[in-house]
Amino acid sequence: MRTSPERDGIVQLLLSRLGSPLGDLLLVTDAERNIRALDFGTHEAHLRRGLREHYGSGAVLTEASVPTEVALAIAGYFSGQLSAIDSLPTATGGSDLQCRVWDALRHSGRYHYDLRQARQGVGFR
Image (cartoon, rainbow, N blue to C red; front, side):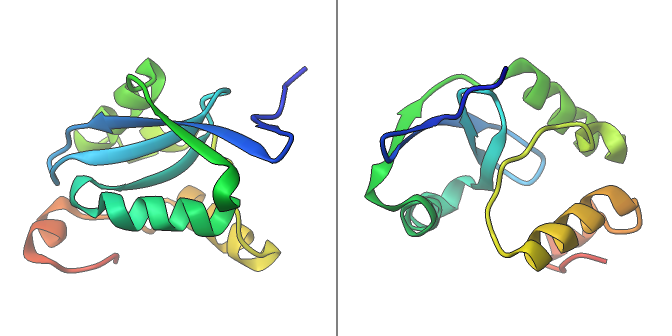
């Protein structure tokens, strides 16, 4: 049985830092290794502000090492195995519509971030 990382209004979250071809990334997971957030290393203030907005003052963020399965999946993704991240568990918020849209984008295979476009500052295709 899975336990919730949220207890008595407190959300225990883990912050990890990992390298990528796009630069350093900030990964936020919970105790069950669900991905709660992912952002660029240069956007830590933005990430922390978003976590406060989403979880309120009850979010406790602790530095931790990157979960091995996440590191391997992200490395695989950046080496061209775009489906490597499909099985990573996530636990993000948003409206029902937002969750359905992100889930569809994540699993469609039609939408991915092209590294060449990223280096040129172009968005998703």
